[in-house]
Length: 330
Image: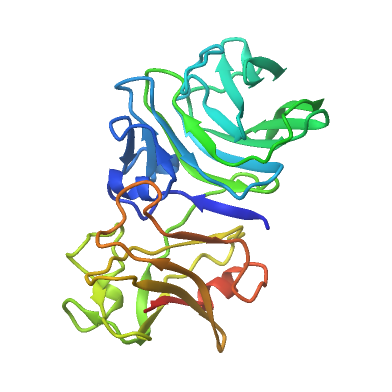
């Protein structure tokens, strides 16, 4: 299926926004949002230096093979520990943990407390791109780590348990700020990815009511959602809005598109909202979410739908992406 989740946090504007894009944080005092310390000066999620306990997770589709990649800055070094946050990456496989440590001797990989792979490469505290592929098997398992595109550790025919990989955890490693950006989960190598924020710039077909002004797109095209300051609303089943979006550059290679929707309900009872896209003459229902009475502000609250192919299953290209209208329907 390719990429199942990807974000560079570019549409965020608060701690609550970054929480809503992940599925767990161990402490809201140590996991934070930053507006400018992300890769290339963008936005990021980071583990605050107030204590060595910052950790966030993303649930993934249960499978025996997973790849995760990210830009990371500020990694420290620490040896094996049962602490949840001395490692910088952790895969959960049933009751077994596969943890990766950035130590003074180099990278080390443990299955619970058993060392199963290592190398002499230390990930520096500067910006690096790290990509890890784990295959779960009791005897024919494997793990490979790439740093800035170069394979630095590769171990095969090892015991990596054999259970399905479910949550993946990203942690702190030291009492310093550690920044994560452009984080993805996939079923195979993807290479170094970078996110770009595309925003609505035209009304294509709209039935919702803007809270002010003469158009709808200007109510939802902020660089970060602003709650009830600007919004569109409707209480009519079947009402839908479709928008044109800013273009991606023609020379971009697109690996995935993540659609993030921020919405709430103001009535009682179940209220589903559909994510829709119009490609050519065909309209696609991509996902549905039952809304809460408040905007997303915590882990598991948010609505992010990552598409590794266009709605009609064509491979992504700038021409295809730029022609699609995106929106929502009650």
